[in-house]
Length: 312
Image 1: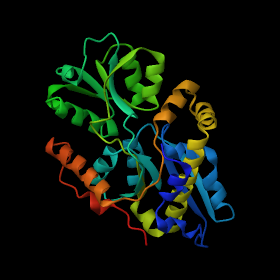
Image 2 (image 1 turned 30 degrees about the vertical axis):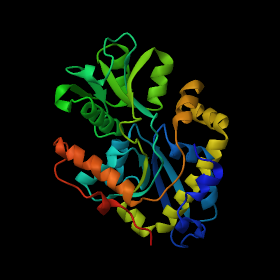
Image 3 (image 1 turned 45 degrees about the vertical axis):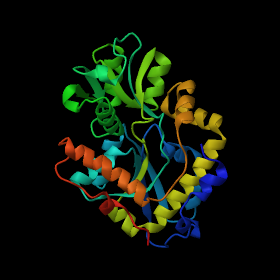
Image 4 (image 1 turned 180 degrees about the vertical axis):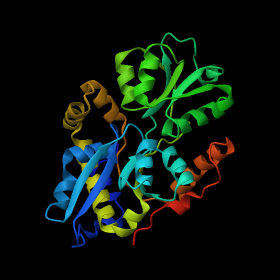
């Protein structure tokens, strides 16, 4: 976890110029968020709304079950800004040029895992050969599963993937209708709190599990001032949340309906800090894209650098 000073220092220099907003017609900033991550914390702190007070900008929040669904909304022009894991932007770029990277967070090696019931005879990833593994297609855990299988000498062809959103995968896992589940927080923390499970692998040592801030290309081009304000207030919200985990946990438990211990466990695994896109992070994403292409999961090769927003 980063200190408050480090968090605020991680914001690109261009964002420290202030919150000056263009004085023009009324605008609506449409933000997509999930039940895990720093945007839901920003929603609760209200820091963005405070920073925009007195401007012609209003904020509209929309919750999504997972990253692929959120990026579909951005690609359709229904949402302006959001946050997802590493794989969804790659699939989004393969189908549209409307989604751009505007920043990222540090890796979160314990924010996702591949799990089985504690009573399962499966002891490791190699034991998944011929077994059913539930996952959300094109999500961060799709990359985790692909990489974990490769590390164990397997491919996706060696297992039976079952593509389910988290809300449908949980009852299938609880009832034993699937053998294993690749899942992220807070759903991971929720199932671990509810029943005995075994972790076959965390992201640690397998993939980075990095979160990315993404925007609709046209919105970012027309509203660079709002992108600046957004990233600056996310950094401020991160600093507050890292220093007030108890209060932040109470907020999220109330909003999501998840038990407080589940939310606190998920927040303890969350990493904080807004960072600009750098060549090494772009190269990391390119390696993921190339790996999906090699498995014939992308229709054509993409160049991740083409989807990186450049601040004016």
